[in-house]
Length: 110
Length: 115
Image (cartoon, rainbow over all chains, first blue to last red; front, side, top):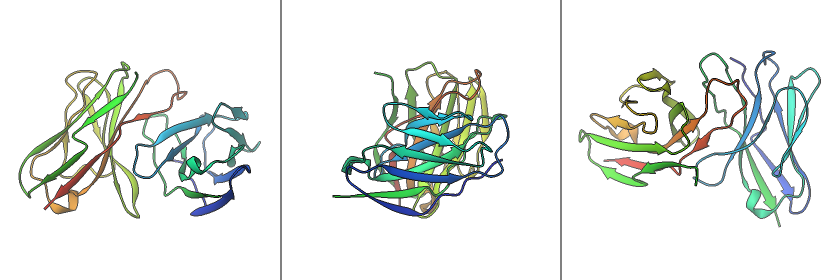
């Protein structure tokens, strides 16, 4: 199973783009990269996912390197409500299990 | 509204008194799962189910039971709760079987305290 590595915490100024990196150097060719976030003690919230192309939705953009060994989640205009723990996850196909790491605690500074 | 509903939200119980945390989803999802979250340990999977009558152990199944008699429901059963099961519990669901193109929907959580 591919594992992910994320920084423990990051700060970002309100209104600026927040760029959250994730390393998944052992990812397999058919495994997707997913991002979730958890605000305080609420249930994790799905943000975005991708295989090898860059993806964008109303919440964020996902940039995956060409070798797929790392990715970056971009929140284009961070607000205080984006303060949360962000999890980068690689999905294991064979049994649909997802493994949460420790995530990155993102602090948005006013 | 598409959602995963857990009950109760908060529960304080005593050691050894059997309890059930219910989880229900209204999205016709095949896959359901239970997680527990503890400070410093992140989210850990307890059990999961890929469809009715199919359940499998996750990373920390000891002390827990589950059942999947209906597609929409996936209760978590603690036959004899102990203080080390004090935790924040989440239920999640997703479609399954059409690749991995789907995110998970999580419930709001159940905060369990065993004294």
